[in-house]
Length: 165
Image (tube, helix red, strand yellow):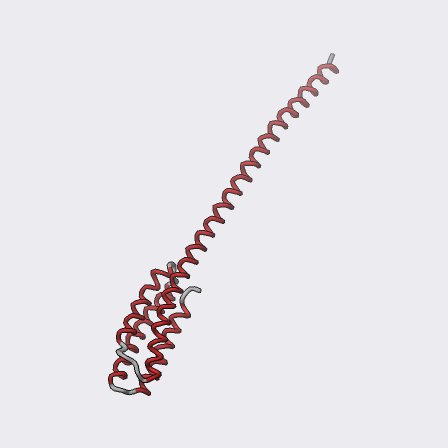
């Protein structure tokens, strides 16, 4: 009788382990599926976030490039006039270039503080250089005008170098 009772207890214990083991196994599988699902969702969200950031960056780069192309066209035209000795009033193109440069921080989006500060300080240098260009042009001082224009171009190049690519 004891032997039968012992066998019955062992069988009940084994069945209990088997049944409870299966239940835990199902729970583990369910938890693994949920964990995998969460990981995939997070991965998709991160990918979407990165693509949104990249598209914003691309959009801001495109806008910045458009503005910079306008600046280069104005500057090129101004340079041709200065080099030919037939430049008109230089205060208008300089003012237009400065106006366009002031639009760059908004178009560029997340500009680093150091880059923004450089753009501001270089814009002030452009304004002073533009005043000197106009002064030399009105005084017919062509050599000084060309020298000041080369400084103006270098300052523009300094601004271009801090812009996001």
